[in-house]
Image 1 (cartoon, rainbow, N blue to C red):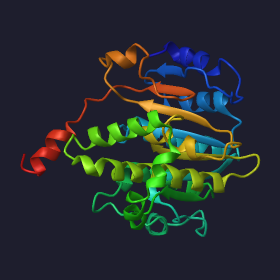
Image 2: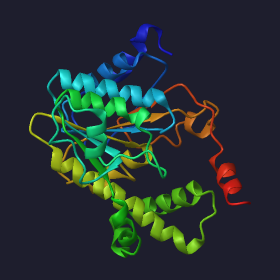
Image 3: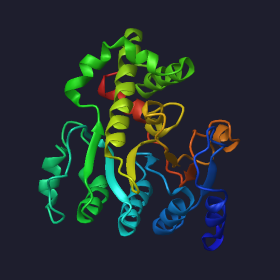
Image 4: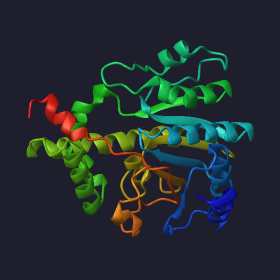
Length: 287
């Protein structure tokens, strides 16, 4: 933790805001600074930019607190053009709702359901409603469920990633499913991931307006420059990337800087005890 936030500011304010052709190693900040202070420092470091991609670990409430602050501060500056979310399907939006719309109306517009594995509204509702109250449209960006089966069989999606990134995505799918997926399902499931990134990129790019910033919120894997949404953006669309990590400090490889994500800023928020999803999955399958 930086004393009185001075380390945070000095780290984030170093350098200009122009997007280089070859991004340098990310600026790494850590600590428990107030989310409002962190959001202000990030915006001072990264603006102006037409698109700001902010990653998260879904189980880290500090990350959603930062997102809400970014929404509010960009809106106060009248610079927030739109909020795009992984947590809602592409095509759903709040553009037709008034700023005083109820949470029920907003959830209906975004086709948001907590059931059947949906994203928890109590976690993301404050982020969404901050944008709605500011009169800023919220767009779902994720691939609709109805399109997933078609994506699984679309082999051309494989060619949208460099070979190394494609293998990393396949490895992530394998590990994310605890090595329980049959080998023939790895490639089709990876195509869904690629199609999701493609859908979010398309939605974000369509929402860009001159002089404003579109804020895209998604999991960390979706926002990395060499792996996710940035690979599918128009080549002339400048963007900035923030990755937020809540991994234990004992992660030796990352501490050595060997596995830092490709981003402008990596924020190491307070570490959270890892949840053993694989044990839970195996138990549910009777293994």
